[in-house]
Length: 347
Image (cartoon, rainbow, N blue to C red):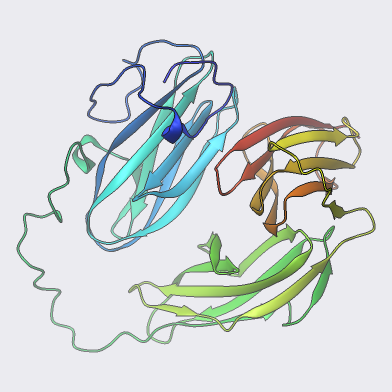
């Protein structure tokens, strides 16, 4: 699709593309050169076995990855090199894969890497992909024999959220840190997943298991899931937390609701060390606010879950971080629309 794109867009409703073709992999070198284009690769990827897979998408100006219709990665920061990762659990066999890439002015650049239960991080190879109609599970059909001679059953791991306690209350300007105890009687815990209101938000691959983030005012149910090296999974008992508005934060639901998703202001900018994000949210739903440094590393993440449509005044604090330029990204989860704003911390 060629046009006046200024960032990655969801092209599902954009009609027929300007050009089509086939490729063995995610090759953008042979694409027609348009300024402000979006290209979509569609096909199938072969998962050799059932398990958890991690994907890394390197997109110079913006890119997205979906597996079986589920968004795994979405990023749009024009002009900034970036690598983003996402996780998905796949059954053995072929899965529909979609990769979108946005290019503004610079040379296009995109690559996709993955690791799985039995292999380390590597590029998605031509042999991992097929185009057209997927014909069934890999390996030529034939049944699943085997697995060897062990007769003992694997004992699932145990997992518990140890901090904070159930029923705690926090203010929206404070970071909430969750700590988990996880163990496995006959093996090792490989991963711990954190869920907010039933949605996976973080994967931790290394003990001590923990995750910290900030929340908008509201009530949230937090659970943690431990996965051992044999793939057995256990979900923790839930805890509930309540987040109340700080003196500086509040959501004003005006009778004149915004008509478009927009970063209305970041003031002051430059700032030291705090500023306020003014965000227009035309639809109810989930929103993510992420701040990156110029190297693409995540500095701060704020989850705005189950928000009502309206306007948000959200305080941001970069105490403890070095002076410099940072990229503020606001994403509407339902539509996938992403906005970016440069902010400058001056100490």
